[in-house]
Length: 491
Ligand code: AMP
Image (cartoon, rainbow, N blue to C red; front, side, top):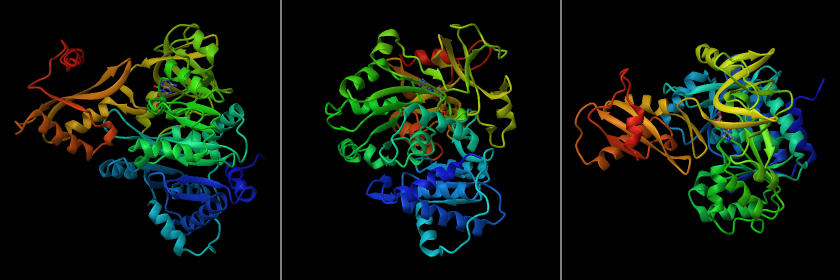
């Protein structure tokens, strides 16, 4: 029998006990502390929760205790549900209720428990097994309700086995950049890349993100070897002229996922970081982080613009299919379908949504991505969305999510949200609003009021930048709000 996933992580606690496992702001945790604390917390959780069912919701930002809580949950046989502090209370409440969480842990609560609980509690009898949920991530849902993607240990193992085989990370050497909050599946790439190789997870916090001088200072101090971020984040860093190999001399590779990697971004990175590789990877949360990857070198840049998203991971299939789910010919456009051991069993407690998107393909679990794409010579190309899902600065957002939340406000009779594009990319969002009753104040004041109200329900990154107030929406012949006519008002 192969070694349990968690033993592969715990192993580093004895091999490199003093090495930093995670650093975030001024806080660090060594490998021995991480393992010891997660064992102690797992024992406490088991003792405390006994047979109460449900996962453990973990609410915080980038604190080292987040990792303690994640590992402790799976060590006592329960999945964890990461929830970043950028998510407003109203939505946190929905996630906690929707996940059926047995308990909500915060970093402060973790420290408190560890301070007061004796180490002597017995270890939990069972850990998460291959087909048990390992984590659940809540993503934007088109009806305004966040939907929980269940990822099993089998899914995660399929992804991490491939990640480790492809990148040949050097044990006890790598320092991984953690840019994405833990509630986004991109973070799984750096988190488990690091935990499985005795690495160091170097987290950038929201305070550092909001202060560029501080951010570059931190990036310089980390000693990064492996960069994991959205292309948007790297693009932002490239604005700084000194963002180059001299600033980050140990940088070996840039791993991107989550949105289109522009050829210009890749070529600038190759030029500024001659010792580093650049990789484009693609995949949705529902298929565990990424399912295709390709190294972007000068030869690839000369051959393709836009860039391909990569070759399928061994043991999986990525195909373009037609409406009936039948594969189309090579080079033809279709909906990208992913089949393989990394495909989630579905959305938590939502058989309706699961039945719509999840299927089987040649005996393997499969997911219809809703992405347009095509496959040519073994390479997969992404060609946009088929629906109202967008990526804004790397964040996955359903336009319907914001519309539903806007309509829930008493001030709003109807709402349509549209992406505003710049240079072929979504740059911001615009909300068209029909008010339910006249509202005092200028349009600026009205926008500010609605933004504040909406910000109580959805994360700040989802709140539209621009609000336009209309007496009524232009209609299509079949009586729907005419989105094209509304989009024309933006140009
Ligand atoms: P998420 O679940 O947040 O990872 O978002 C998944 C979606 O992001 C995919 O279905 C695509 O629409 C988009 N996406 C992911 N990776 C890439 C990529 N490398 N290039 C373009 N779009 C991507």
